[in-house]
Amino acid sequence: MDSKQEIFRITRRQFVTSSAAVIATSGFAHAANAGGALAGQPSEQGKSGEESGPGPGRGPFRVIIDTDPGVDDALALLLAMRSPELKIEAITPVAGNVPLDLTLPNALRMVEIAGRTDIPVAAGARAPLMRRLVTATYAHGENGLGGAIFPEPTTKPVATPAAEIIRQIVRKYPGEVTLITIGPLTNIATALNADPDLAGMVRALVMMGGSLSGGNITPAAEFNVYVDPEAARIVFQSGIPVTMVGLDVTRRTSLTDEHVRTLEGAQNPVSQAAAKIGRNAINHNRERGYLVGPNMHDSLAVAGFLDPAILKLQDYYVDVETTGELTAGETLGYSPVAGDLRRRPGMEKDAAAASMPIRGSAPTLASTKTSPVLRDKFVPNTRVAVEVDSARFFDLLIGRLSGSK
Image 1 (cartoon, rainbow, N blue to C red):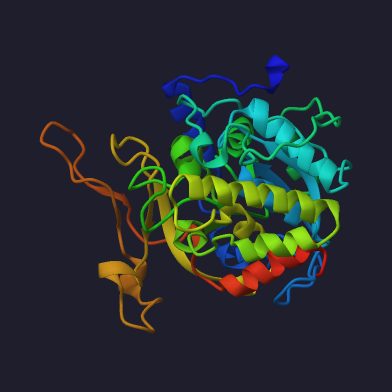
Image 2: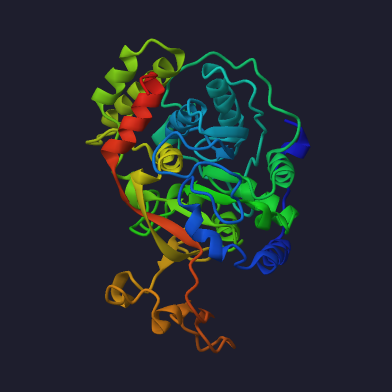
């Protein structure tokens, strides 16, 4: 791999300095548009004449898909490439579920299977911004596809590194590009750090990641955020309108034998590949003693963008723990209408609710810090998926992959 395609190494001081520049430049410039980040619905900044009614068939929407294939990533990519609502400008693999040496060819395999070699695939980061890579081969198998074997891809990645191609495409189409991120956020954070004005040009970001109800790699953290919490924090604080499709809803999307049989019965390359990956993943789960099949985490993020009726979203201020020994990668959601601090119905816009402080840890005796308040009022930066219509989701996913929809 060309050395220019590897993520640059930065010191903690450089990281803090560059991150602060991104956050200070972007602030919450998109806060007024965050409501429009509901899946594919256009924000005020990003409107360009697309149809915005509910359900599939809207668009087309310009998207970049940042991914670490991965079983559910592979099916999510196939779903996206079978969806005419999407104009996929690039696919940018990143190290995550498995190393980049596997996520990159896995993405190229999916492009070839879908007959979409017109889509540029750009190699991304080999490692998180500041940490050693932790993979999930225990869940996705050594090859990332649950052990399903496919021929080596003949398609080659483009020479431009992922972070740079993200920057180039967003600048080419300012206010039009939605980033669909279904892996660790290293590539996105790298692009934002390199170009502090970029966040203001991104239409929205729809991510699979995070959780407000506990993790899947530690009790606190969801895997994608855990792998690179510093990158995730840059994204959440960038001012880009974020839609977070996390474990709160993706845990309700278990792939079943019936789903796989439907895919196996359809005679097209996409359905056959999806069935092969799905069957291997289900068998892998059973061998490890799980009672249910793999969850379609990443496919739900793509499907929620295609059809906003699949998800119910709620406004939160979300931040990421980066220093906790036991909680690094945890996503924390603040809301004046949720949890023990919630107000009664109808009080969402009450002045007291809006002035809800965002608190960090209490000051220690040894610290010169005098206040635990990080932000003095509640300003949402993320729409968090809190409910899912699983039947509608699988109707879309299996329908698109099998070719019946």
